[in-house]
Length: 306
Image (cartoon, rainbow, N blue to C red):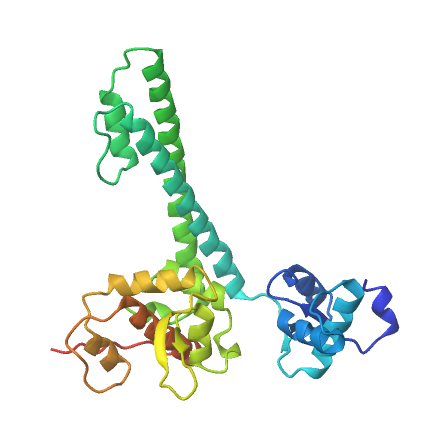
C-alpha cells in the first residue's frame, strides 16, 4: 500500500474509525512516518447519504466517502501514536478480565461445594476457606471422590488467578505512578479506576468541554422535550464506554460517607444540602472533575464541612 502511494509525495491518509477497527492500520501508518486523520463513520455515512440517498456502502464508495469527509469536514482529527494511556488500557483490561475469570471460578466452586457440604457456603468464599472445607469432607464413594478432585482443581485455578490479580494490580500501580496523573487525588479513585478511565478516555483535551466528556462516559441524563413544553431530565443515556462509568459510580459509593456539601465545597461551590445524593449524579460530577484535572493536572482538594 505504501509502495502504491509513492506517486503522491504530499499525502495524508484518512482512516475511518482510527480509534476502533482502523486502529491497527492507523498506528502502522504512523510508525511508517505517514500523516493520518481519523474520520468518524457517521461523517462517511452522511456523504454517502447525500451522494446516493442511501448509507449502504461498498469498498469503492466507502473509500470515496471517507476521502470526501476528510477533505471537507472540520470534525476530522489528527491521529497521534499511542501514548502511556494505551499502556494503562492494556493493564486495566487485563485486571478486568482476571476479575471476570475469578468470578467464574468462584461460582463453579460454590456449585460443587453445595454438593459436598450441606447448605453450601452462604458467604463470600476464599481459597483458604474452600481448602478447609475440602479437608473436612471424607468421600464415601467414587462420585464424591470425583467432586472432591474437581474442587481441588477449582482451588488451584482460584489460587493462580488470585496471584495473577496481585501481579496485575502491582503493574497498574507502577503504570499509574509513571503517568503522573492527579486523578488519584479524588477520594475513592484508586489505580484501577484511574487506569480504566484514562485508558478509555485518552487525551482529555480532545473534548471541547466537560459536558462532552460526561456524555462520552454515558453519565449525562436524557432530556425529553416536546414543542414549547419544559424539558424534563430522564435517566442517564448509558451511551459511550461500558466500564469506566461503572467504576466511577463504585468510586462514588466508596466515598458514600461524604455529603454533597463536601463535594460541592471541594468544587468551589457555596453551601449544599445535608443529605446524600444519587451516586450517578455524583459520578457525573466526578466526570467534570476528571475533565478539569486532566486539563490542568492539578490535585483535587476536598474541603470537608465541620
